[in-house]
Length: 214
Image (cartoon, rainbow, N blue to C red):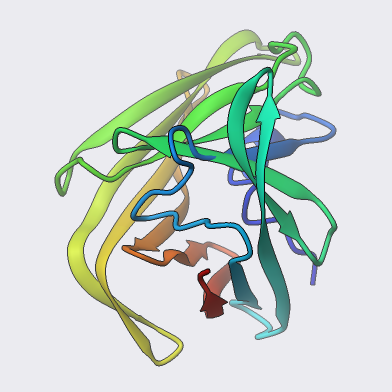
């Protein structure tokens, strides 16, 4: 079973854009600690990914290494023990950001793009959009539109027998007008005081098994 790192939320988008390689970086802005991303140094989050067709599972752990910088900006570094890859995350003012490296896409911006994957101050049903400029074979220059919609807010969700409260569910859709109509890529669930607890995709589901927050 081939796993795509949780931090790389946009791999599928990049595949749709016919890129050859991708990476993403996740992290916080002010104190690098927010209600839906309690990534204090030394915290550990263990996940299990299950294939929806075969039932095959794969376990891995994200470890919070501490603070780092990128272009002189503060970030929190998380390391994936399965792949050895890391991600950079930052949050503040209700926004949760990650950095996306799209340099492998022809004619895409050479520098990582900041993306906001969660806005914890939005109401149920509200959404936001981001555009990623890419160049596709034959088609030429287009914008990939990423639409995030709050589909759950402030209610509970049970994951592997544990019930989490104050959960936010975010549906992520991608489109390339007028070539590709909106298509749901995944739905991510975040619990207050815990962070990411579940990711639903067409081919698999990832669930939080255990966690230790320092």
